[in-house]
Image (cartoon, rainbow, N blue to C red; front, side):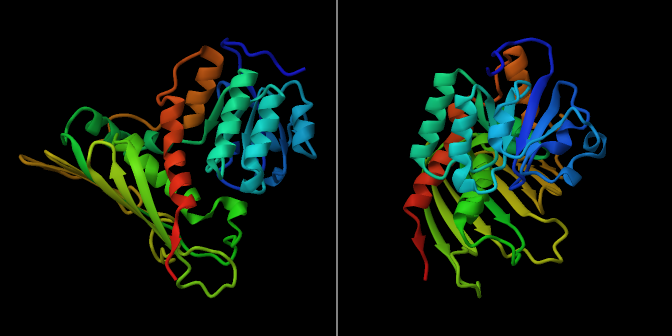
Length: 330
């Protein structure tokens, strides 16, 4: 029998399945309200040192074995193949477990709807790992924009550039592909940080620069139609040179009626420019909050999430539509 859905100050029993993405293992070393009880398809050597020798943690051979463990209340999914992750999420929900899923949590709108239907039927929580807006400096940018500091947002410019590696999968079913796995962070910057909903996104992709014979996209561009009448652009690529000081060469610029905000060089440099002042760097007034903490508090305490579920998943919906209609520039 699956564990009951309760709200209490107890700790939450978590299992991790898969290592294909940003798994939450490091957060569980000393988490005050969550404990690791099982894992599968994940290298034990990658666990925090304090957890490696804990014999109370089940070394499971499969997701099915995880789901037979009554101590497991939530499963964190970084499925070995992203194309299987929607089915994995539904299996967990059908077994009465909450699910926390790496992005993209689904590769089609149909799969996403089936996940949400399974969560509703099971009366369990489902969330994507959607915390882009709650770490600094993007959290401070979100606060300033919500406070009206730059007025109505008119244009948003986002860049997500990562290094090329020979190990990057040419089969997009493995990691979701460039547009989905990198673009979702960019769309979250637009909607969750800049606070403007995207009405439509148009996408064009290219394999130019790849010497491989597979389906690897090297670059992707999106043109955004914002719901308030504004516009935006997103640049995605695997062209970040090895000498660049951060793994991700990220840029977010938000232009409003009263001025603009920016975070560049992977968030290392920030700036706020208004008509009467130029502030650089932007003072950071709040600490980071890991999105996992919001999820744990929702399950244990019934505390509302900072984003409604439709807000959390809307960037993915926009991207799935854009990806389905994407044109290959070759």
